[in-house]
Length: 342
Image 1: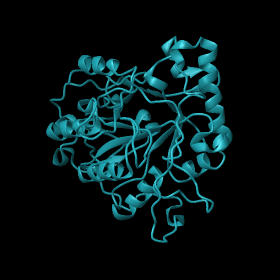
Image 2: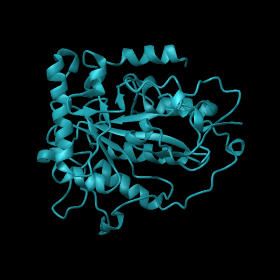
Image 3: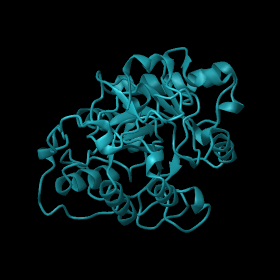
Image 4: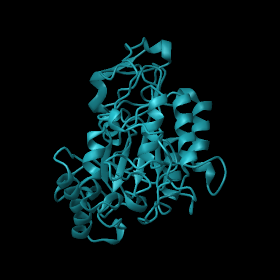
């Protein structure tokens, strides 16, 4: 897909974004009596691999990156935005099988992509701070059946998989007032927390002062919850920008490096001149059938598998940007001192 066509497709979906915050009920499942303490802090158990000769892994760090968008993880989906726990596990299985390694939205937008040679980055994002994504039980551990618990459990048996995701929250994330328990836990365990505005506002309908307050007040909430918090990205509710658009990234009390849309296609590599930090597309997690499934994750992962040279493939060295000399994508000016064409 050409950049122009990709942009057109993304625009078609700006008004079909995430729904408003809805209370979810996590699917309960036993963890076999095993405690979650072993995952504090949780990191991949895979040994670090030496950088490869780029040609041996067909490295292309100017290739496209899927940014997947999730909402509720529930046993009985009520909309196309919901996925069941089994759906989510199956998608993680596919991503791992096809060599995808999760990175946070913060690292992706900053160009800090450190994944093993021959693998592909994927960004997992969750909107609305729904309790079906993450909740802490009375014992202080993730509630079984939530997205976080599923990712942690998956990592136990898949050494290459990194339980890394970005959670875009509103006020009272995960049903936790001020995020006082949940946000510190996520940050302490390697997850990323980003801004989704205080009230899930349609920023286009707000004046400049109100739009900045929606973003700035939520930024302040995240920072109050944890001294470690440093949100650097925003997922725009409904995929809609404020006016002027630049307020999505910078305003009173906040300064961000990336704004994520709803979209329907993979993102350009952050190392290319085509990468637009104000308009980073995402792909809705979805199976191969159903409403607008042609724009969902199952179909897009098929397309990327069929056109493997078009996707981002790492050379294993985060200090250099490797790509075939024949590649016509232009490297962004700020990264040109790191290029390694081969």
